[in-house]
Image: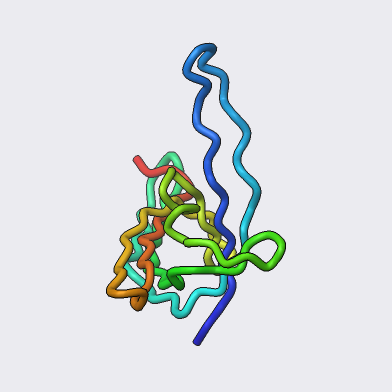
Amino acid sequence: MTEWVTVTPLGGKDPITGDQLRDGAPLRLLAYEVAPGNTLLRFGIGGDLDSVEFTTYLPLRHRGAGGVWTATAAVLAKPFRIEVRDRKCLGRMQEWNSRGRGGIAVLCHSATGKGT
């Protein structure tokens, strides 16, 4: 079952001033599949920690601005945030390209709250 995810390239820091740079423009992509992964709910005195992981499968190419086909791996080459099922996650990408077939697997991790 396909579903929409939103990818936002992270801005990083300016190498000269150390100031935080703005994040890139969000990009909506249609994921082939979102598979659930590990989950953890830890109760603590200082607060609870809720950690969740997903594996998201994306196409090798997507239609970018102006309807031009763009390689998805180029967008995900730098650090990025990905929103999956209303959870803002950090993502890590692995490309599988075999003669133009294959896809991109993204490991998504989100942790909210605090654990002690």
